[in-house]
Image 1 (cartoon, protein in one colour):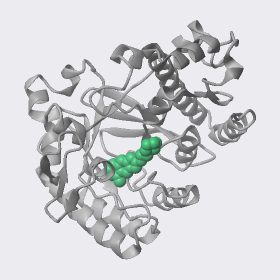
Image 2 (cartoon, rainbow, N blue to C red):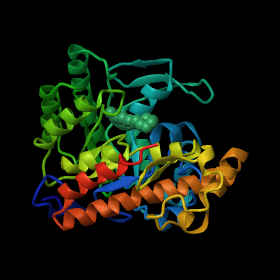
Image 3 (cartoon, helix red, strand yellow):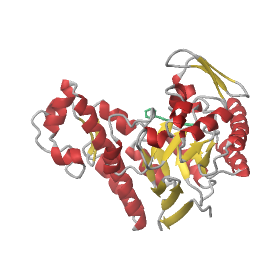
Image 4 (cartoon, rainbow, N blue to C red):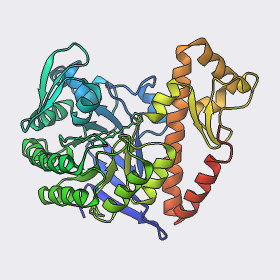
Length: 372
Ligand SMILES: O=c1nc[nH]c2cc3[nH]c(NCCN4CCCCC4)nc3cc12
């Protein structure tokens, strides 16, 4: 049992479990959802709003902060926590996925990934060594190995070669990791091929990491493929280490992943959807711009106790959105993040009561009774 993570309660009826993850900036109760703060900001939310909403840890991106404002500047100004006035844990993604998803001109070689900045067109080479150096300079509590996320439709041969390089990059990431106070997680690749996933995981375990993430998911694959990979890896991942699925997901994805024994998640969905007026509630999704809410004086979600649901009507939220008010993004984001985090709190409680199986059934029913 590693000293930074303890499984606290294993649900008696399924693979779901609660745990406690200890980091330099505090303890985290898992299963946990991490709001995404790509450029050192969870868009439209102040840190105190995040803590009010129950956020225990947020995610930031190496790729973006390396390009702007630069990791050396952040380091000189005291590190990411002080820079953004966030005193709780931060996890940084290692940048490979962002290069793959954000840049056109890029070339992958054994050394690393050469790419053209999506900001100013300058050329850069991101290597495992530089990725770790940037994450150490930022001062994140949990840092990620530099990996390659193969395209969702990549064939077996490509995926096999890619995972072998991801393993070599994982070794280089670990060799470059000097700040032992930070936790370093490995990222399992292998596409939709369970045997390649097993190989990737065994190779990473041979190197040894503080936690293991599933990469290469939520990249456009069919849901059944994602669930198959989750199932295959759930039995292989070391049970006493944190298990993180990157880029997951919708509320349903979170419930399904917890049910399969996973502990950590991040996704831009609650923040991005909020800015588009797509709001999550206990009765399913609400598209706030719809005319049906024009005179609706009720709260966005009667079952939600967040600041927004206690102080504003759907009619007002619809008005703000249609008027293009900045407050629309602020209030919609606050609610969506508070709702996601309250869902994780209800999930943790159901597990502690050995009721997660029943919770999962009821959740699915609720979300699909009054779908938009
Ligand atoms: O394989 C990965 N390695 C490092 N980081 C990653 C991050 C990821 N994020 C996602 N998916 C994000 C999907 N998200 C869903 C909502 C709309 C925007 C895209 N897959 C990932 C795989 C990886």
